[in-house]
Length: 250
Image 1 (cartoon, rainbow, N blue to C red):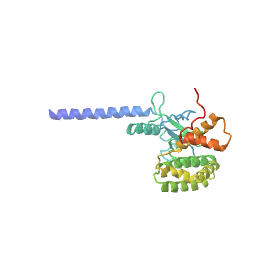
Image 2: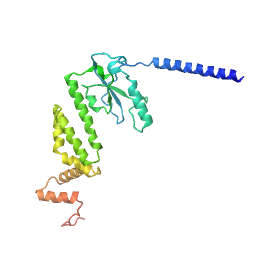
Image 3: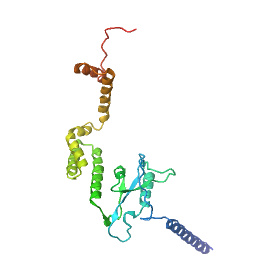
Image 4: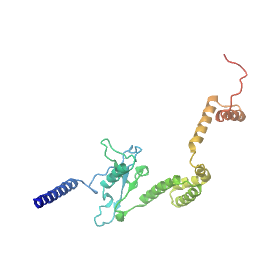
């Protein structure tokens, strides 16, 4: 009797396994994947402050085994990445109106490339870039690499990173990047003050003082001399007591 029950249980488990495999096969066989899936290019307002995934579209000049060019694993690699990220961390992900993860496709020549927080390229052994794409990709990588500067705690190591990044940027032959690198070098010590202060102060303090000074000048409609303007700013910015008025007002 026990032997018959055991055989029946094994047969039941086997049937369930076959049924599950069949359902999975039918379910996933309907999922389209690769270059045949329409590319979802970012909209003008695709940034919503949450994490999103951008797949790089490129031109393939040869084929690889089991490869489909830029569309390899598209779009499910990005969907799976964002889904698992939202499940395993507290990172908010970008979703559409139905709650599905937003995934996008960008070309290296698209302006949206520099607004993507995370990019991915697959089957890269088959790609080929033209001169414009090379310049755009180099600029994007330098931009993203610069974000590491704010992760340092030591002003010494932050300065070493800044010097190395500026050297690379000045050799990039990209005029806007080179201009920015020269500006950074000019204000190097001021930037490192942020780390010397242990990140307790930001430029918000200076911006607040500048705004208060502008408001003070505007309220007075100008001053007759710099000395008078200086005294007024000392009182406003330093919160000094106001002088006693010569007349009493009722």
